Every structure is written in C-alpha cells, then in structure tokens.
Length: 115
Image (tube, rainbow, N blue to C red; front, side):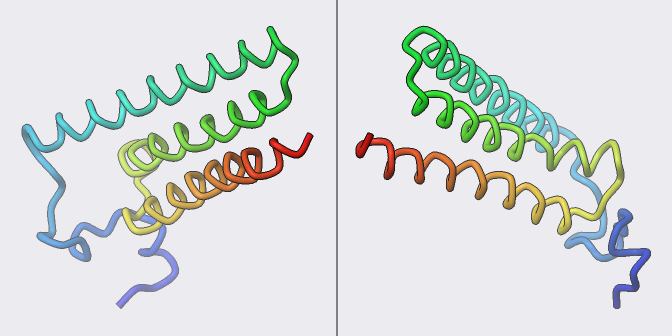
C-alpha cells in the first residue's frame, strides 16, 4: 500500500475519510495547538527565570522538559500543513518530542530530591 515516496508526502487517499479537515474543526484545532504552545512556552520561560534567579538546576531541566513538550505538541501541525508530511509520521515525531520532554521532567523530579 505504501511505497517509500508516498509515506513522506501527504497521500490524502490513505487518510480516514480521504480529505483534510475543513471549517470549524480545523479552526478549533489550530487555536488549541497555538494555546498549548503559548502556555507551554510560558511555563518554560517562568521555569528558566526561576533558574536564573535561584540558580536551581532543577528548574532549568524542568524548563527544557516543558520546551520539548510544547514544541512537540505544536510541530505536528507545522509539519503537516507547511512541509506536507504524512499525518502518521507527524504523530510519531510529535510523540517522540513529548516523550523526551516527559522523560526529562520525570528524571529531574526523581533525581532532584537527592541533591
């Protein structure tokens, strides 16, 4: 069904329903992804400012973790809409970014109490 070329481009016929999202569904998705990016970057920036103020490495690592989560949740739409990549590949890359961010935060919180 897939060959090497069609896996990396946008084959609409392989997507459920065969077409893009249209109308209000698409608008709500863009608003939701944008709000997730804004608030994730805000949390990341506040954590970084706390790191600079208190010199606590824990806050720096949490900031990096939230940065990965924020970018991961937003990058899916960018790759799909702008680069035209396959939606399944976009989901995979988004999940990897979010997983890396969560691992950083979990590891930081687990190890952070021992210092």
